[in-house]
Image (cartoon, rainbow over all chains, first blue to last red; front, side, top):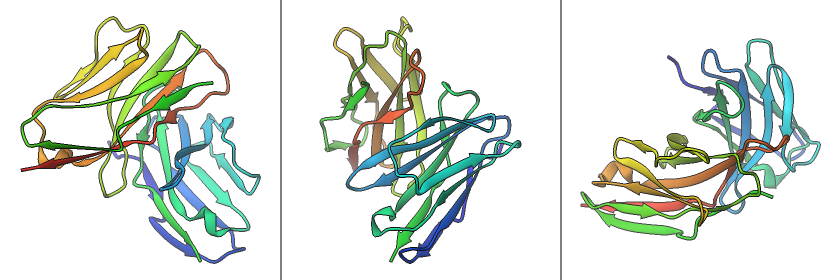
Length: 112
Length: 116
């Protein structure tokens, strides 16, 4: 069974631009979560989706948004990029919301 | 509010030795799940082991076992017979199961270095 895939793997953007990250969960998994990982803040929760509905949202500004499609694939969008948005963005999927989450390889975003 | 604490920034162990990575948590929810993940330098998070708050026995998965002490609110990961490939960052995580709107939260992590 294929694992969680994330595209792109690496991204370089400049301040003020916007970016869209994509995540394809493991087949059959209905829940997708997103995390931001930085050396200073560690792993921080962004969003959680289940059956196309946002179930939870972390403490991030409104520039961060996401959605989940009917096939469980998810996208995350960050508008008006800031230098501090440089991070590894990890997507994870699980069968149901409370099951163990399986992570993708991440998208490394660099904002210049 | 739920909280996870990993007090060991780094641990060093020799091959074939056992090592314990500490994790303490805080929650008022009697129903919760505890998870351990491994993150090698490549960046991908790898699920290792799960312990439910109502599980009577400590979880084990191959060389990994979870030393669950509910009264002390600790969930330490024990890796037996360490291998060079175990060198990585290890994260403890928790999720409350009765509270709506909660998410999986992670500790700051412990870097494990295994030497030959």
